[in-house]
Length: 639
Image (tube, rainbow, N blue to C red; front, top):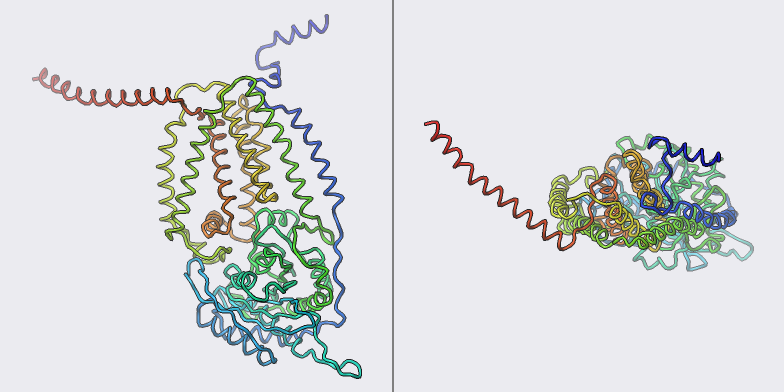
């Protein structure tokens, strides 16, 4: 009786104060939250696997001989190079002079140098000649270790730190190997390194690592290289940093990185910094680096960069020889020499590349992270399949909703096609498929006329596409649910495609799949709730833009920098197509959220719309013809 009395009292309450929650599986609550929550239990298994897969990196032992780095000589060399050739941009007289300077410096130590002449197109500068220079210290094995530094700069300031410091250190390390003969025992044997050592001076390093990419792809030595130590901006006052990002979702071996960190720690007393866990995950999801270790790791060659400049090499007018930090110069120079000794003793133990995320002295294998990211899709996929089953049980038609999505997809495909056409016509700055210098004119001076033309054509295309997407009548709850379901089904397919192309890139799409899943249940909620849920879905691309803008100091230019990466071909085409399809999903859900959605009209409805439009035009014309006769009659009556 009490229960009946209580239920009767609740039923007598006014609407809104005691409204019952909609039934699960109804049109107001189609998403099965219980199934969604239950599937998350399955994600615990990959998390446990990832937790137990954390391993400790085993560094290579320190070299038997202590480093003998001549800091005063290296600082003097860096100052000489910066003063003699302050503008070393590829293709300039300064670049030619710097190449001859480096060649003479090695020849004075008894090396025979080799040059590789090539050309590349730099955005905003056109095709320019470039030159890589190398010298080889032969070892007991034909397999080689590369020590490298780029000698060019951006022309903004003399580039004493970026990168005369790295070039001077390269010369000083090579000098030690030129004088490595010694007497050992009564036989007086010649002491040589276990591996051949290649001292490589690259060109175009300030413009996307063009020289490093050339060596990694075309050098006859590339198949013999076991590891690379890159020296870039080592004479600054910043904290010593290891750069380990690649231009592919790969990482150098954990023992290789830990060895480099230990050699730096021995000279500085502090561990070398590297990107945070989130930063490393983003680097795997969107491979990007402004340093020259990137193309080597992408081609399966372990590599690391020693620097004091952070995630972005600094180019400034104040980069003069007087501002070089001799203490830091000495520490990283000795670290580089000691690292080379350790690698020479046991590099075979740290060969090959894979994907890792480093947690201090420990690391997490990439496959375990991929497993967690793919597992995080399961609750969404199960909920979408259940939602599709609800729609099928209610015999709700999905074809009109899918056609509406196809219309939006055609619009974004048109925009992407025009963008690509403009790239072929040279509207956007063209160049090699490498990250352009963030300070270059191609990045800081946006092609306003080209962007205005693209916007105008996109607007015209949208006016044509929207005619069949505008609501002409009230949309039923079934049609709205069909629109949500079609968009979420496409989103599920796109997530699976991302997992197939690069599983790490799921970090950019996971916010949208788990936020937008609940939009069908929020149709009766406030506009602010729906808008906030929709915006959460855009957190993935926003995270990428924020990372490039803040970590790499690109700032607001990031809104053109990313399209420039696409136009240069640096971003893989499959990911670009997936992103356009994802934008079409977002457009359909935006229309549903704002009440501007309409299912694609049938052939009969399109015929009625056409007849209605023709009738309205005829009515307007008839009124235009009638208007002068009325005015004439009025004037006659006044007369």
